[in-house]
Image (cartoon, rainbow, N blue to C red; front, side):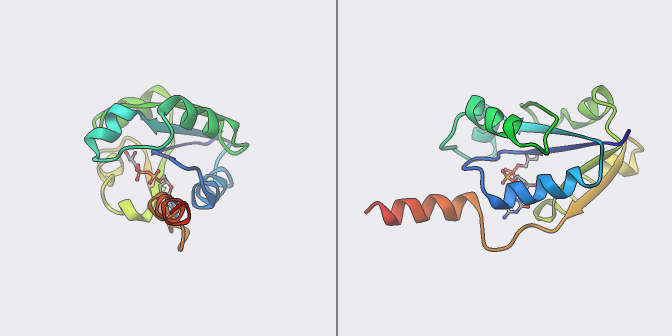
Length: 133
Ligand code: C2G
């Protein structure tokens, strides 16, 4: 039983998010996702279109995702890895190197997967705004 843990905002859920979750589920038996709360996103300088409850419900409805929990701080990852018995921490390569400490300190393996090019929440947001003018 291999468990992968990942994190993200997942606002305006798009094919880039779907393909990342699909590739992660191909590498494990159980995929657990930490979804950033609105308060934590404010710390990240992000304001979402969909609030936490909606983003978490959308993630839970994705067939690749087995469990969703709130991501409230940068510091909670080590505790989460232990709590959920995660074997692997994985995330898109826009974060490459940022979470290597989880492996070097012996908590779990770390994996960065290539992002899906040509799609992002920021682009979706600006396309919607442009098209509604
Ligand atoms: N992603 C992707 N391809 C895209 C867009 C996003 O593979 N075209 C991946 C990102 O690399 C990330 C996940 O989808 O692994 C979620 O992306 P975001 O919602 O942008 O997450 P972010 O705000 O970067 O939060 O503690 C870590 C943070 O919570 C990550």
